[in-house]
Length: 322
Image 1 (cartoon, helix red, strand yellow):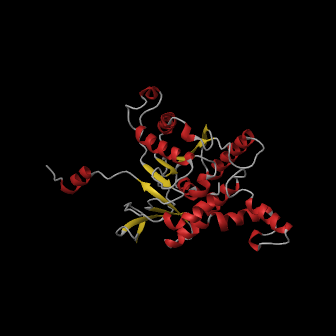
Image 2 (cartoon, rainbow, N blue to C red):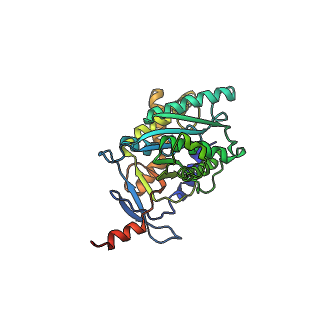
Image 3 (spheres, rainbow, N blue to C red):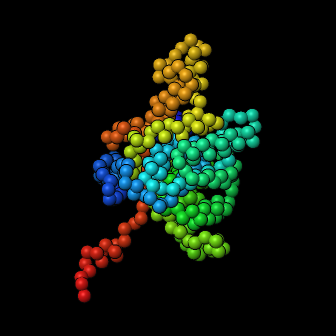
């Protein structure tokens, strides 16, 4: 599957159904979509004050290269700001990448997935191991039940995943995972759902979501990842079995050398070739998105946070002393 081609072909569409999102401590700017009025897009920048100390982040991906491609910079930023993070992979990746057999690909991708977690500073990995590219065969209720248990067990405050409302998504693992995650994060806070779990875990509400997509989506949060771009490159480097990262740059350098050609950007050794290939080509959408918002590198999301309470706002504005 040519993920990067999909991204590049749809890049002009991904930004640009913005909606408003107010958040203290973030700057914002106006963008215009032909079919919408001016709406606010929040620019989220890194904070050195550790504002998320004590909070829990669930990073959810169907395949081991999804987060490295779309959200690794944001994950690294949030971990830096104090989150404790966990990585949940829903598929087993048996159909993806190099390997003589599905079992070999399964093990190779599992190792790569663990390396992604290590690079990004995530505490633990949970592999759900549903069949690769066949997740639409499973009863989504089972997937939701497992995710609900994990959200309750880990006391997740914030999650990062594919957008359940993303348009034109062709991979069943992506849209099934996204739909299951969105339902599970809501149901995790309800004592009426999976009450048998409550003997060992408590209901818990997931408060924030950062959703990304390969195609068109609402974009109301742009995260400045400029300080974490090297971490994002490293997370793509360790995806050796699949994805556009791994050894793609060094393989291209060797192929060109056999043809008597050379690209200066690929340097003279494998590590330089791999790193520079990822920076120049795999991360190109991040550079383009950053330029749109006056940043060097950026990742785009549909962010959903806690809804302000109209009652609390009314009380704060109108309550008087007795």
